[in-house]
Length: 424
Image 1 (tube, rainbow, N blue to C red):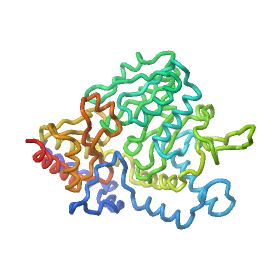
Image 2: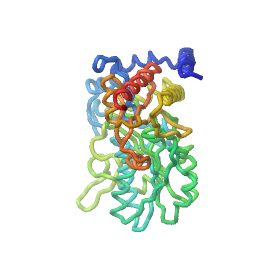
Image 3: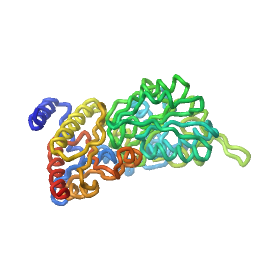
Image 4: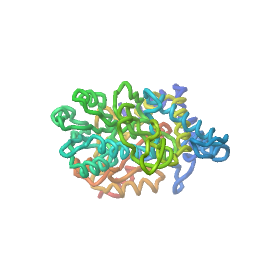
């Protein structure tokens, strides 16, 4: 099947799929209407951050103009209203990932702080000299460096679960990595560089057969894949709001209540205490024990609004559209020739990492930028992946619910132009 005919079929499919009206969706994102260097913006950097729909922008303005006040403890109307919005956002997240209780949802600045929170508290409570932690080779730096910091301070050892050249984890090696000293397994649900969707359910079952808890980094999955933490039976999960159309500075650490009850707090300050004296401090009930200081209560409400927006469209509809975009883009890139694609797993989210053979990824990205096409270049905070392939970085195009087949065509023409300019 030719790429042109494939594109035609995809367009016809979505034209007849009234729920997924792409142009109507694009109208919800005002930033997409602008021009860059005289070209209509093609935003393909969604794995770094997604754009924000008008409903999220309206919520932020409404909050600051009508409800702005610090949450919890205040007895006046504005504080009580802000607290209600904040705690309703917690309930929304609970429902979105199907947590058992609202007490299992801890608000953080993002997935990075969520993982740092867990790494500190978990290491302080459970890690001793000689203990072992297993981390996959495709983890984001935010799921490597925090564990390294505390492993080094405790004299613990980090083991690595490798992946093959298609970008699929070698799950048959996990059992051999586990010993009686293994304390936790950390794995990304979906790779931000390779796009690989890992079989986290299988990983969790393997780890649990040895009574080992599992952290899942869902920062690159939450906007693409329906996640049910009870079905997965993961012990911890981290996600970022700005990856799923909310504002920046808000994220979630999900943890099973039995663990969160045992773990010590990550930070001290206001809101995470029950009583304080110079002799002793007692901590607040979950989840406030992990929410020291003034939380991003405005961001929490923006996350609630964003999740409502995603629910309205339907995550399954978004995933289907993104899958067709990825399939089409991959086919078109392969037809160009002279391009290496990194990440060829059977199950992927809508991430396409590649290099023009003989060209530097940064130069390719610069040329695309001058054509109004926003992509990401570099290591994508996954240097071990780059080391695996013996490269210094890639060009990454990542697709979201508002991207179109016409924008893929723009990307392809831009790649062809870059190749002509950079490769002699």
